[in-house]
Length: 136
Image 1 (cartoon, helix red, strand yellow):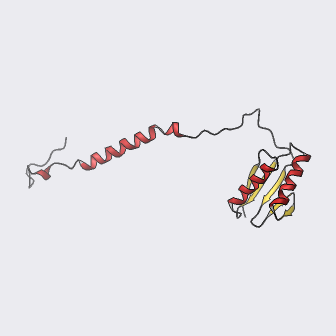
Image 2 (cartoon, one colour):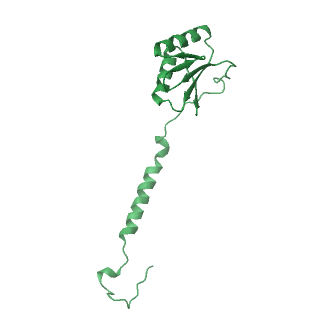
Image 3 (cartoon, rainbow, N blue to C red):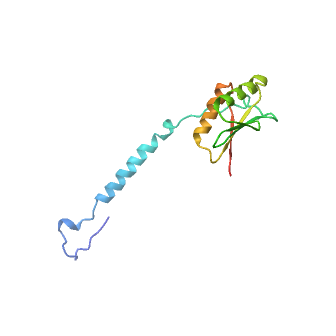
């Protein structure tokens, strides 16, 4: 219990009791915090991860697509437009359907280039790709 000094000036006046507003504010914020965090688990998004029987080891010779600022480099060959890249990926996929694809993006390249590469690889028949970031 909080006791006030009876000899203090203004004893018995309205301002002599301790302020309760800050304590009520803290309790209200604590209550809101607990209510919001109590429902955090059902709001979490589930991520589907591959099972061990589905995952396979990468072969020794993956197809490597380098995503650069100015263009594409596939199998050490520079490609300037998306159509040439799509044709090269389709040819590789038709020759060896089990060959994995590694997309190596330069750290300076914009993220849109990576999304374009994934879209082109998907349209060429690749179901997935490993992504690697190369720093300068």
